[in-house]
Each structure stands twice: as structure tokens, then as C-alpha cells.
Image (spheres, rainbow, N blue to C red):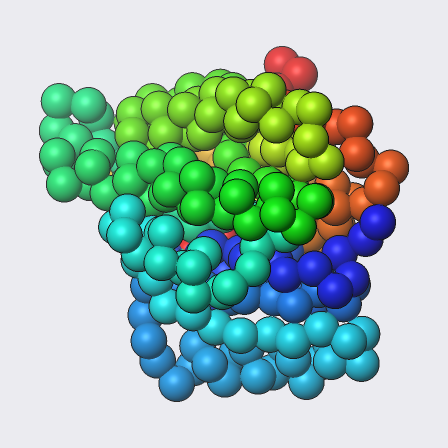
Length: 260
Ligand code: NAD
């Protein structure tokens, strides 16, 4: 069994890791649904460009707008796609502040997008997977689903919650041809991480290189970022037949961070 001919919905997939996973699945011949909360010409153009790039592998690529902070949108995304064999819960946002200064609206948004969205999409997608007789749920959590950092209360809480929910749904589907796993990246140089660099430079009076080496990659023993291509490859592996007995796992892709 492979991703070929399967419908794959990847939330938050117009950039970064989600787009990397979409590229990997489209390259394997899946019918890919890209998603974000915007409805711009660029979003549909991105889908068209992926379709052109990977069309020879037999799959299609569509873009469906849905705001993953809204429960109804999460469920409507799955309904509108019409099928869901592979669900990748990837949409995620970040905000950094001490807990006593953490804006309530930011807490609510991070918990909604990074954790609760996966509850809603999974609940909507599982009946489709059961009818199809096959399914894969891949939750993009984080090393922060297993370890903490100061000032990231909402993100760390949401990612720990996502890893916990991964295990629960894996147990609920254990005797079915459905697997449910989390991928836990360390730092990957995407727009989400890029956005943290200028503030950190200002706060500590560091250069960009110093922030990357001494702040971001300080936790990553390999001293290197993970790449979106590596995360895409692992998602594809989880869709393959040899991964059929991997369920309820939290797979670290963090250059040794969580070995510390
Ligand atoms: P990114 O900012 O490049 O991409 C995030 C995507 O989510 C974008 O397509 C954005 O449009 C979309 N998105 C944001 N809010 C949304 C909403 N309300 N509804 C729908 N889509 C929404 O970020 P990334 O680094 O690629 O992160 C992707 C996932 O990987 C996140 O869950 C993040 O927590 C996780 N992650 C990232 C890193 C890293 O170092 N980059 C490490 C560990 C985990």
C-alpha cells in the first residue's frame, strides 16, 4: 500500500513543513488537498503549480480554504474534500511571552489551531477512512510535544496535548487498518521560525548567525536544522505498507534534542 491514488488533506500547507509534506505526497501520486485560512489567487496558483510539477505521477492537487481555529471550518474542510485517506494535521502558529503576560487571545488561538483542529478533523475523517478500509493520521507535533522551553506555554501545552491525542486515537483504531502517529520535528527553517529570529536578535543583542547557532540550534545536538524534505519523506514512509504496525508513535526528527 502506498500514497498513490489516496486523497491526502494537509492542513496549513501553503508554506513550510505542510508544503514539504504536500510535495512528497503529490510526488508519490496522491490526490492532494492544500489548505490555509486565506482565499487568494496565489493559493490556487500554488495548487496548480504542484499539479503541474507532479501530475505525471497521476495525482491531482486542489486548494480548499478553511480556518483551523474554527471547529466548523475544520469539519467542513474534510466534508468538502469528499474523501480523506491521509490526514495530516500540520497547521500551527506560535507566540512567545512569559505566562503572566501571555495574551489570552493568543493562548486561545494557539490551542485552537495547534491542538483542537486535529480533534475536529480527525473526528470528521475517521468515518471516511473506515468506509474506505484504510487510513493514516499524521499529526505534526514538535520536540515541544515532549520537552518545554520558557515563554512558550501555549505552544508546549498544545503540542503535548496533540501527542497525547495521537496515542488515544491510535488505541481507538488499533484493530483497524488505520494508523495514527505524530512527527516531532526539532527546528526546521520555515517562515514560522524565521519570524522568531529578528525579535531574538533585538532582545539579546545578537547577530542572526548567533541567534541560529546559540539560541535555536543550541538545543539540537546535530547543530543542523531538519528540512521540510526530510519531514515529507517521513510522512510518506508512514503511508507505506512497512509502517502498518507503527501506530501511537511520536517520531522525533530533532538532531538528538529529545535524547538529552
Ligand atoms: P509555517 O508558518 O511555514 O506554515 C504554517 C502553515 O499553517 C501556513 O500554511 C499557514 O498559512 C497555515 N496556517 C496558520 N494558521 C492557520 C489557520 N488558522 N488555518 C489554516 N491554516 C493556517 O510553519 P511551519 O514551521 O511549516 O509549521 C508547520 C507545523 O510544524 C506547525 O504545526 C508547527 O508547530 C510545526 N513545527 C514546526 C517546527 C519548525 O521548526 N518550523 C518545529 C516543530 C514543529
